[in-house]
Length: 303
Image (tube, rainbow, N blue to C red):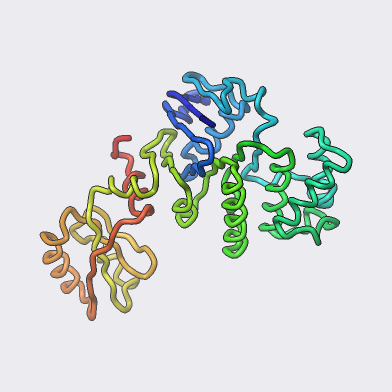
């Protein structure tokens, strides 16, 4: 077991940032944390890394209940770029190498190998402050891998990165995972969530759902009807009053959440006609993770 937390709680004064968090991560998994800003994901990372002291509960990380004893086996890529903007790529890596006790030919071999892996060997003399957002994240990844950890923790590593760089970054993560590295990461992107082996959905400091993407989707309690029409967006105000659990745009269609499409579509059709929308069509849709997380974000939903 790479990580096992039991009823982990963390408070900041009267604010309960983590509420009875229980998570198990097996070796070789890509485990994703997803949830809105302020849900507790970063606090969770900082607690299991020993940067925050838990108020109650317990956890083991790489077999130890003391993160300080296993920190040499952990790589960490924080949410904000934390390397020196005034040092070159190579100088930043040299600094990290010295902190890990890696020097001389061993450092040069590892640093060169990793820079080639992320396609940055040509940029080792460039100042970190002059790198693009995607290249900065690749540099942070290399710094976190220099000491060859067993576990890599990444806190929203692709936030603000362009789509091409995000895809390249995930190609790197999958390559590392195939080579045996366990990954625990948080992400705000639904396409990245679907690439994880297991997920935990955080909301207001607690876990609302946990499991594989496929398993989680079986828990979706409703049916979804998609409405498609020209000029749909100009009718959104009136469409928001449809008789349904929820109504929201996703892509180019309006998703209408109901208990039963068969029973409720006639009333919905009549409503759409009455507001003046023409040349419209309906089709049933299978729920995706974004649909599920929208439901789980409802504060009245029990964890």
